[in-house]
Image 1 (cartoon, rainbow, N blue to C red):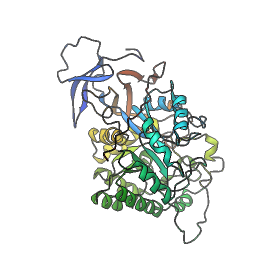
Image 2 (image 1 turned 180 degrees about the vertical axis):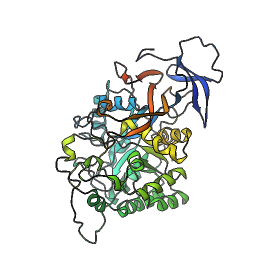
Image 3 (image 1 turned 120 degrees about the horizontal axis):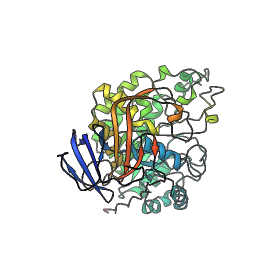
Image 4 (image 1 turned 45 degrees about the horizontal axis):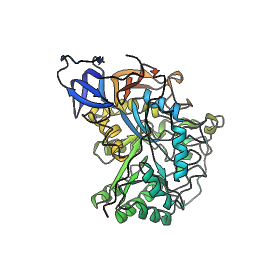
Length: 456
């Protein structure tokens, strides 16, 4: 079956249906799952893609990806990012409103972004808008145009064109979002008064870690929980790195806050104790914390206190990582991992008693729900898009530079051996990736999410 061709049926001994793995034939019609047959010996009147005992499950929905096009296309772009996604079994990405220039903070800027993305996406792509000071009257038009929701920062974002918001800005944005069904995503760190200036060797990771203590996340999340309860607007905490605020989050949810939270593959896979001096490819914000904190994140994930796991793929050009000086204080903060989320997660999760059904829940279904795509993505059932990842959870591979499809190859995962090889990826029934090769032309769609009508 050729790359780029439309697949009418997929047969496997291991199809993940609900919480069960069982033999099945998935019949596909018009890009949707048409029917699922449990009798795999049945004759079907079409060519069947038989994948033997490879696991077939819903494609990954990565709801936190910085594509950076237009404006910083030397960092990443839609062509390279979505190829990397396809190679990792990711069938839908949701693009963050920064670090592109211009950012997705006005209707005009969103149209520029759509124009740039058209004809370049190998997987389906949706978009977040942004909340910055003074743009509250842009939020409704952006909703009407089809953004999935909005992202804001409570601390400097790292780029000048996406300033962080004050409490006053947040109140103005919340008033616009009330009753809309939209969601506000928070980079939840706040500047706190330091008792003493932290000095230290900038090439030591511990120096950087001390400059972003847990309390910065805790205080930011305190603000988020109060706003969420007051306005009853859906709120979401992106890339939780510290386990300390989990009690705050739980208390707010129990009090009725419509609040969700994600963590990332790097917080679950990497820990501060193992970061070498000068290895600035490990720098991200909030920072990677210690191993005891990491185990608390895993426990919270297992207990359902953390709702989903994403990549927060945030690449840059190698020079911005300041590797020659190894300066953690000056280096750009961001980790590239879009292609490797599924094996990164499975390599650790499988050792902690997580099942394949947990992978789908945390990497596909809940991320689709956050992005308001859960009526078409993240589930193997009739009527849903035929977005499939076909993979071998037992097989091991090593991450090499030649196998990386992001534009810039710098990643803390280089040389790492992982469990779980993606064999093929289908987007709406079309074979977009197979065994290291891609379909000749991008077949992904740009997804516009219809606004929910106010109940008021």
